[in-house]
Length: 300
Image (cartoon, rainbow, N blue to C red; front, side, top):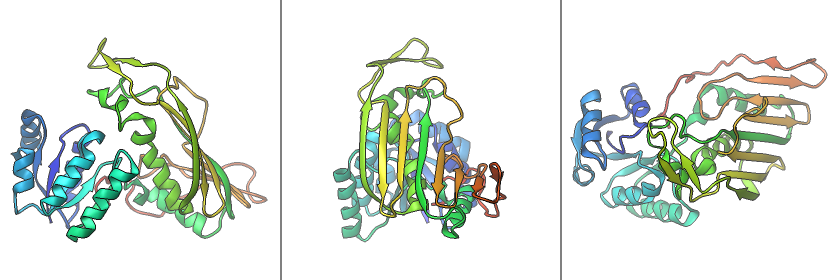
């Protein structure tokens, strides 16, 4: 399956590096709103640099890998489907449910396929956790917590402004990793409630954009409670307003027979630890017997 990549930003390198590992697809071309960026990426990975219009019009390309910024996801997804191409999109799939629903309905009408990141839940770490939960190692999961806490991405990202515009923020940026991992482990969410705020209306660049200011249009701290159909209640906090925290695990689940530390859902591997009531006096490490433990973005 010949694939064209649109959006040659920070995450594109991981997908392009992995492209040769998957027999089912071959990335043959790339495009970006900045032609020079697409040209540089094409030269680095041996691809054909194209404009977005050229890529979408190319009949030899079967699938579009959409790595644009969140505000452009739905537009590019729609244009690709209308051009008769399957789509795999970076998260978030859309800025709201209605936007995402229209894309899915268009794909059905066109008899095409759409998919979305994250696929990190297919990694060995989370598959091992799923196996333990399915086997009842910690009993029925009753409750848990999930934390994604940092002070934003301007300390490392070369172009962080979009993280603070519509479609950005900690919930849309990192929340999909956590919610996808939790749904994989626990099943569908039945109810959700949340509250949010933001610390400032302006962010200041730290790394390559030192001193440059970015407007903050979205909430940067979201505290949510998810009630799963299974009965489990999970507290999820995502924040760009935390300078430092104590040892708050990415995901921790508590069941009727024990507890589990789940690895970082932004990664494919990670340490798994369990506490089994009556059998262990402290957290015990678990050996991971599954494959896909390095950065396999694109496997989904």
